[in-house]
Image (cartoon, rainbow, N blue to C red; front, side, top):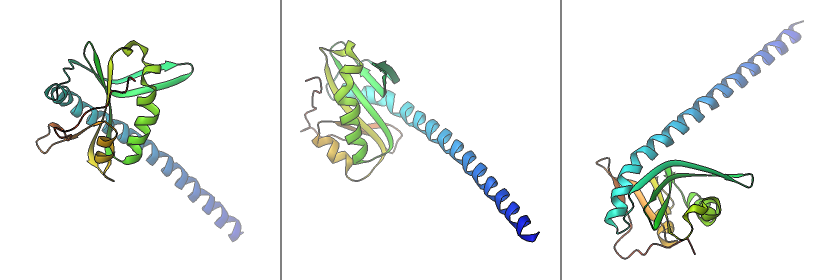
Length: 171
């Protein structure tokens, strides 16, 4: 009898653990999603100004641009455009080398496939991070990407120096 009661108590405790874990994961996903939107909202206005100062006269930005082609979907965090150029910007709270690789391989390399209306335009890539680790900024720079971050005053800064030549990913 005692063994059966103990087993029932253990099963109830495990059920509570599973339910608590499920609720925690829901909260984490909600927080992560909202945090990402906040960081994108902080980066977008300053990015426009920074690209203009770097000689890429973009005039419009759009956030969370989504499309579907042939059963596949793509979302771009921020697009900055003008009549002949588009900057594709990936925003991360913590930017890692793996994030840069994923952006290069899964988004930037296939950008024109998913967004054919930008064919014939220069396509530049950019990554932004509040926290940049693993020398992801240097790695991105070497791969022809602009690197942005939030500065201490809450403004956006492009970290690339004057020697930087951005890669045109339209070719």
